[in-house]
Length: 119
Length: 171
Image 1 (tube, each protein chain N blue to C red):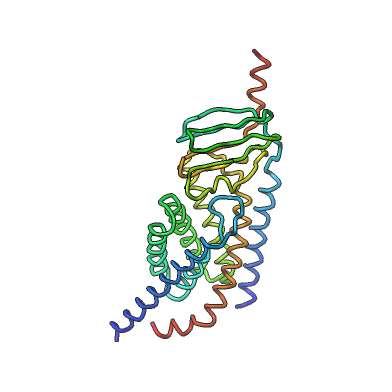
Image 2: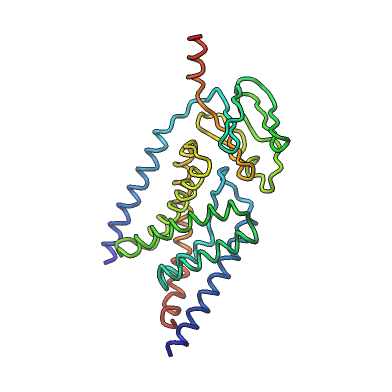
């Protein structure tokens, strides 16, 4: 009985490990070029990650872009989770502020760049 | 005789509920951050697992609901309550599924619970924000979920081997 359980345990652990490792490998890890800010499912704006700047959103959140990284500097929410999420720079990474329904995500700038070339 | 058994069971469930609430509170005091919102050890899941092993799905579900509502009303806010509610329901359902097959050890049941707790929270976040950007964190969440699930499983197994038989005899 005990050996039987052990066999299935090993199978499950193996499957979980394979899933996690493959997800880590599949994830792209390029550095993003643009930052998209979304509030309440509405797009607030797109900013360039290569340009050092400070973004003030409704006096509730202050974002700072510095050295190709973006981070939340100040927020009026009680838990400050968005500040603890730290500096992000990889494409796909995001900072989320739940109380203000705010998403800051880094996106690939490729589509926009192509558009610029076309025009 | 039946009434006395029920009263005993109710006492145990109330006790576990109180322990779960205190564990949730202790967890907010630990300054331990993974850098991802919603990622934590989940100490309160120890009680959920022990109730699931000792009594069953129905009792564990009721205690989990009570714990989430009380913790949500006192220590955290409404958003966190919805997240832990979704994670708790999904993880408890999957743990029951794996437990009822009797093919897996209690540690695996706990690891599955930890993983699906995070998956449930991720689903709720994706539903609320209407975006798939959170899938970026899926590998991290699965890894953290399985690690914390293993820790919780070991602790729960130690407690269960010590007091589980006693509680089962009594109720």
